[in-house]
Image 1: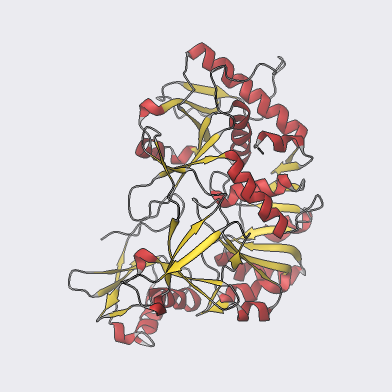
Image 2: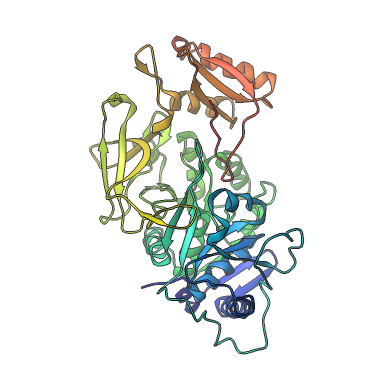
Amino acid sequence: MMSMKSLLNRKWSVKFFDNIYSSVEVERMALSCAWEISQSVEKLGVNGTDKLFVFVIRNNLEGMLSYFTASLLRVRAFIVNVNDLSIVQETIDSSAIATYVMHKDIREIVALNQRISVSFGGEISLPVNGYELAESHYACARFYFCTSGTTSRPKLIQYHEDKLIGNAVHVAEYLTLNSNDKTLCFFPVQYMYGLSTMLCSFISEGDLFFDLYNISTIGELVERNKITNLPLIGDWMLPISKIFEKRNIKLKNILNASDRLLTVQAKSMIPYCEVLWNNFGQTESGPRIFCNKLTSVTDIENTSYVGVVAPGKVMVPEIKVQLSQGEELDSDCGYHMVYQSPFSFDGYVNSVLELSPKPEWINSGDLFKMDSNGYYYWISRSVNEFKYNGKFVPIQLISNDILLYVGNLKHYFKKDDLGKIKLIMDNDISESELNRVKNILEGEWYHYSIEIIARKIQRTRTGKIKIHS
C-alpha cells in the first residue's frame, strides 16, 4: 500500500516562494512536526484513536507538511485554511475532535480547546524515532474533505490515503511526467486539484513550485523556473495566452482545472503547449474520471459540443461509467452519469465521523453525453435543469454565451413560483455588461422570456455559487 509518507523516500524538491526544500529536508520537517504533536498528545491526554486531528494551515507549505505529518502519525486528519475554520463547526461535532494543530505564530485563534502549536518548517534537535502515537491502530491515515455544499449543507467525505495516491499515479502516467518536469501550482492543496497536482509532482520525482496566481507575474514565473507543467482554470487562459504569445513561451503540459473548458479558451492556449489537457473529476472521485488529450485546434473542434470541450475518455479501464436518461429528462439535455472507481472515497461521514459507505454506483450529479468514439461531453449539473412551457431550458448554453460574449460574471438561473425563469446576476454588474446580457437574452434566447434580477450572490468556500430560492 502506497502512503503519503512513502513519497518522502523519493527524490523531489518543492519551492515555496524564495525557499527550496529537498524531499530529505521535508521529511525532517514532517518528522519534527509529528514528534511535537506526539509529545503534546501525551501531555494533554488526548485520545486520538478514533477522533479527528484538525490541521489549521495558512499556506500550501503548511498544507503539504500536514499531509505528511498525518501520514506519519496514521491519524484521521482534516486540513483547513485558517480563514475557513467555520466549516469545522458546521460539519463536525466538538466531541469528535481530538485536537487542533496549527503553527505557533497563529495568535488570533485563542479559544480552541486542545490546541497543539507546532513549528511548521522547523527542526528539532531531539531524536524523532519515537514520534508515532502509541494508540494509533490504523494502517494508514484517513483524510477528510468537504464537498461544496452548493445548494445544501456541506458534507464531509473520507479517504484512505492510498486511494488518493493511486489516482495520482495514473494522472502522472498520462501526463508523462518525469524527474525533469517542473510544475507550478496555484491551487490550495487542501482541495482535490491542488492535492493531485502536488502528489503527481512527488510521484514523478519532479520539482514543484508553490506560488500565488498573479497575471502580471505569471510569464516571469514560468520562464525563470523553466516550468513544464501548468494547471490553470479556463477563465485565466485568454489573458495568459496573450502573455505567452509576447514572451514566446511553450510548455509541455497545460491542464484545465475548472469544471468546464470553453472551446474558445482551449483554442487560445493550444499554441503555447505541446498538450492541453481537459479532464473531469469530483471530490468524491479522487479526483480524475475523464481526460482529453488535445494537441491541435482540430482535436479541440472534434471533441467540442456547443462551445464546450469534452472532458474526454475514461482515464483507466478500472473506472466504469454508466449514463441513464431518466423519465424527467429529454435526450437533448443529456443523461445522468454514475460511476465506479477504485480511487473513489470511502463514503460520507456524519458529524461524529460515523461512516456511511459509498453506494455501488456513485451519482455524479451531472448530465453527460457520449459519442461513438467514447468521448464524454459534460452538459450540465442535474440540479440546474428545469422546464419552461414543457421544454427543457438550455441554461448551460445561455451561460456559455454570457461567459463568451460578456465575461466571467457571477450568475445562476432559477424558476419562481409561477414558473417564470429568472437570471440572477451579481449586483456589481456594470450597466454596459448588463446591456450586453440583455442583448443575448433578447436575441437567440428570446422565446424563454428570461428576466434579469441583480442582487448580491454568495459563494461557497471553494468559489462556487450558493443558489438561493
